[in-house]
Image (cartoon, rainbow, N blue to C red; front, side, top):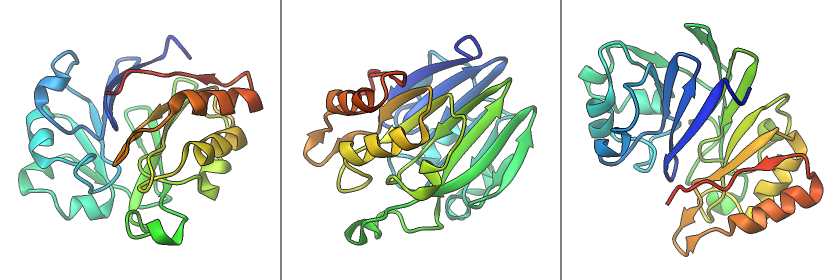
Length: 220
């Protein structure tokens, strides 16, 4: 699996996966120059409509002629016509296959009543991607929801942790210890008060399960 999927952190929630002969972008935002080191994507995933995950201008600059764009309905509604040429709309629970990549859109939402305004249940997507015997979970903006905790056989997971928008380090660690991915990347951990303590996240996860590989990559 390590030779199948290569992770390239970009910034905050933006990432690139090299997966066999596929190039996959997730939530690309910001200046297009951030992606100059990577080939044009075969597929771009957008989890939801917030500006740190969805930028029509960035998408316009990055899409190749054959790039497939995958979004939830709420994002599709906000796309200009020129970004809808190769659009796949996925609702929570939908599954599709694109050129050998199996994709499931799962829920991503806030549990705490005071935070449900940020990510209401049913609007946003997380994605589980599967190909060549590997399974990758891109959580998007979510708390440690039941749908996360019941995931199975995840090789690589990307988990957010920035209050008040997603969840605390403790909640993120608790969720990860429930579904036990082989490898987990804390990402999307910048909030109003600065960066979350990802070293504490790593300590909590490995205290509960030393076999989970917590990767502290450079996102900022």
